[in-house]
Length: 426
Image (tube, one colour):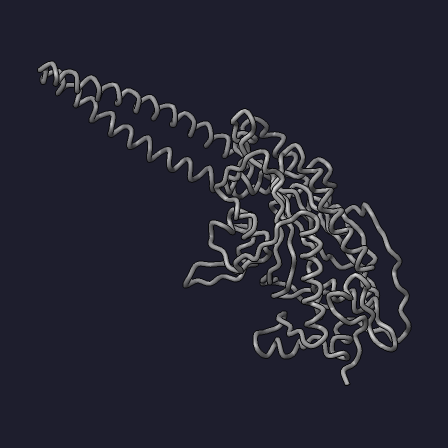
């Protein structure tokens, strides 16, 4: 959530910067400025009345002690009037505060100055491309055919027991999943992240704090009887570990990692681009999260991008790093890099990680602050990234490493899979 003082001091700049996200904020900002002015004026009036009422109460007590009940009674009438006026002002203030909050949550985060303008993924900026795209023979097939041929994933069984987008991994497919999770976690821990295993459901306050609500309400699975949401990513519970917390400046950066299943409704997703493992309702992912000092958060972002780059190199996958344009960014992000791997059989790039700096957008919602040496409390910056999401990594590994006698396993994964090749059972 954008801080109100930013809008108060730079309303025109807020409107202009949000145009990069193709968001017209002019009417919301105009109303916010009016509400903020009324709210501050009402606050002052209420404070003045409460101060006067406090003085009156003291004076009334003194008059009664002096035996001057008559004058005390006159002041009590004035005190009663002040209380009535104070209640009216408090009701007005509550209404203005509610309206201000409702307006603020409609505004997406301000994009960083480096975010390119654009409306679709075609306008994203490729900042690095690395690795050789494999040339497959004429008999090469996409991963959904490989999964059936080698009995790695049973899409039909998942559809039977749950529905489309909930695959069942089996045999070497299940072992590959487990190996990737362990590999990604070990790499994160080696990089200084503390490992957690968070809940898979969160309450409304947690989903609001990280920006999923109200923006992504329709994309989240909801359990009405308990009023809980299935998490779309471990970012949500892990970042909320620090909600309503004041850290010491010396604790920054705080580095956390977690594996979780992730649940996304993906409403409106159809067609060839969602076939097989390309887009699922339930999938596994290892997430990295950092709480950083505002002056260092963009260095932290580059560090996180470098970490994910290292994972892709060890998996021997051709990849590229893409800086998202304003129209392709999330509601809460200030700057996002997508990491994409090349799927040789599908002949297209697949996103496997988004790494974002949210600056103070999430921390303002969750009141996550740090105390500096001078005792001042300041909003921290929050960042997160996939390190990595498994389905499209598996798709690329299967497709890019297929040959006539099986599917090769990258050397870095072999200590985890305990096999160097996927072959047909029996």
